[in-house]
Amino acid sequence: MTSPRAWRHPERIRQCRPRPVTDAPARIPDSKVGQLDALLQESGVLELIDTELEGRPGPKGLPVRTVLVGLLLALHYHRSASLADVCRVLLDELRAPARSWLGVPDEGPADDHARIAFSRRVYRSFDRLTTAFDPLRCDRRRRLPAEEAHVVAAAWEDGDAERTRRRELLQEVSDRLVLITVRLAHRRGLFKGWRGDIAADTTPIPAWHQPPRERRGLASVELTAGWHYCGGSEEGIFGHSASLLVASSRRHPTGHPQAGERVSRLPQLALGLVLDTPGKRIGPNAVHSLARLAQLGFPTGLLAADRSYTDQIAEHFAQPVRTMGYQLVLDYKQRHRGVQGTHQAPSSSMAPSPAPPCRTPWPARPQGSTTKPYAASTTTANSAI
Image 1 (tube, rainbow, N blue to C red):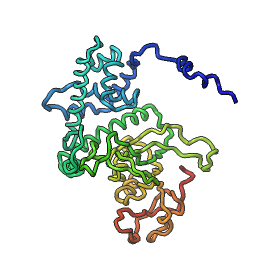
Image 2 (image 1 turned 60 degrees about the vertical axis):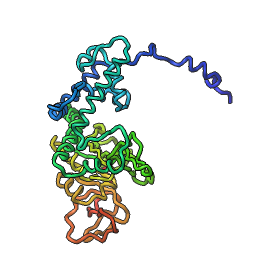
Image 3 (image 1 turned 30 degrees about the vertical axis):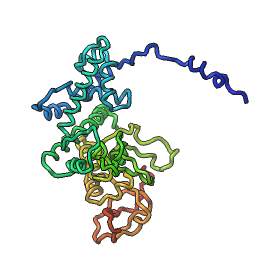
Image 4 (image 1 turned 180 degrees about the horizontal axis):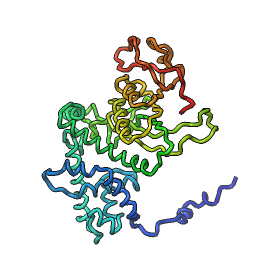
């Protein structure tokens, strides 16, 4: 077999490839800048941030709105949340109208000192934001000693009133940013025909920084990160765990993959997101997102969850979710099926659960275990997923 000519002359083929007309960075349309700016304004997070930053000493830098819009643009066009990319987007890729909206100085002659000064204003604005929301401020640019890192990490867990208020405020900002897209989709009728079916999952979010170095006694720069182990994997991922809720839809009642289209054609839109340390508050984080979603008046249908939610104790996940009106679809282990106490657990690996309260104690759990199986009806839900 003869090789194609393109394989014989790779250098000539490289010369024939299309190239950009100029080496200048691409320009972001003003419509996209206005869209993300309006999304941020309508979410209401700017009012929360301005109230928290009011009266704080020190230079203000750029407006927080400018930095957050630049961060959204960097995520959208470059898939990067780095402040260096935010500076490049604001300086090199915005048109004149968008610059006037965000308060970015007009383009001038290439001056390295001016660019450095602008980048410092961006970093200063973001530092003011993190200082106001961190439960305990620390140096985030270097590895802390293990003893000092434990003190800072404990601030994210303790019950101090001011630290609890800051953690709740930070979660409120996150909830508003996630729910603004849900509100807009609901307002435009994109959820028409949706039965309220939701999929819950715990997804790893890898950290940019390296894990702790125990031999040197140094912690990671990400003080609240940990090792996330996915189901069936023995190798962990260092980072955070995201408790994610996604809008789902049912298949044809017969359950046959070729029976027809899904009941609803809505996209798999994210309905809730809580970022936390791996292995902590898995059930309560999902309940928190469901409670925020209930304020929008959506119907309640099936809630399909993986095994990490099945292993949660009933008071942390199953009981609050059933109280909201959802039917749980859980993944059971083989040893958790059959008779559990005085109730019949599902014979299938997944089942919806209008389970009655248990009247007898659960079987003895293995030593060190904090989970217990939850009884459910024997009706399978494989045809509904």
